[in-house]
Image 1 (spheres, rainbow, N blue to C red):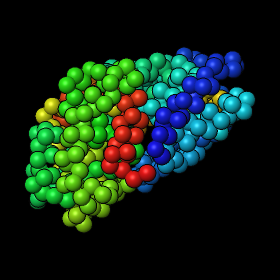
Image 2 (image 1 turned 60 degrees about the vertical axis):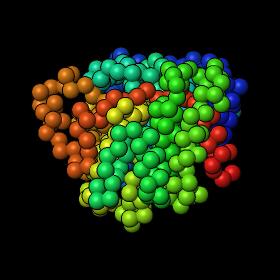
Image 3 (image 1 turned 90 degrees about the vertical axis):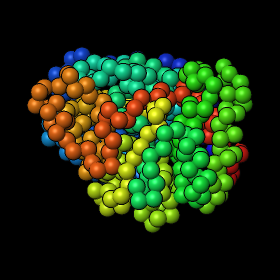
Image 4 (image 1 turned 120 degrees about the vertical axis):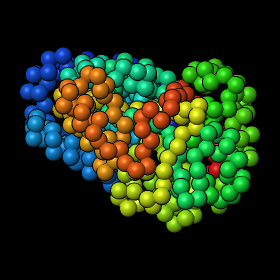
Length: 401
């Protein structure tokens, strides 16, 4: 996995060029989109490592089948880069129509690579009907420092929080306090091993909190002295790593893998990228009821999950129908329910009908979920290029090859 994203960026950059010009469905003519979509099969390449998420995608499939005659097939991924590589390979082979990938759950470096390489259909996402309900903020218009430009559609918000067992720990106000707590409670804190997405986000959270000027992280990494900018991060990690679970010599493979450690009382604290994930896990009997969440006072990194359509999809109309369904108040409310997913909504409550807004207001977010007002400021993700650079440096310093 080391360097995979960087290699992917280089491959895409080397094969830049305009996609084939074909008659494409026009999202501004939605009736025509619906007519074309009826009977299409959409292969959605999306992460398959979560049973609740897989069940939600199955529910979306039932919805678009009933409402629009679209068949949704979930192609389960362990790494989004696999789908990007497939599209690139098809492009190199001259397969410009009816590719294997119709829709991708994507963000960050993978989106930047596909946009740079001209591997995406669009713009379309700002023209589908339910986009009118989407909140207007940087999280949905910029993806890890890369402008969306109508090439992907948001469907869930995430923000880093820290889960803790309230029987043995308490909320902490800063990344520095987390380091001090870990020193006082050796072996009781951990995070997933990068390049796991959550593990890398923890590294970036520490970097954003410690760097002298966080604004430099919005630029591509090659514009700055990487060693100088990241020096505070490595100093921080040099101190905290020996105090981690298993003395920092082993890490959980994924975010969900941390649940078992919390349940088995091996750790008391760990990060999560979903403010409601702990509540969902409690509802699913994966975490003890004593688990709660907190965020440092200065805020935490926030981002959004998107869906994008490759340039050579043969079911673009059907893919837009799926993306539009994901933005429906019904789907967004279901996704935010902690007994389903607990994802943050991308909808603006002021743009909804009174009935729909009331349904969101009445939704019980769960025992471990902070109220939105207590989540604090969502800090912008660094430019996507920082992720690969930080991952590579972390692996060389602390990880196994």
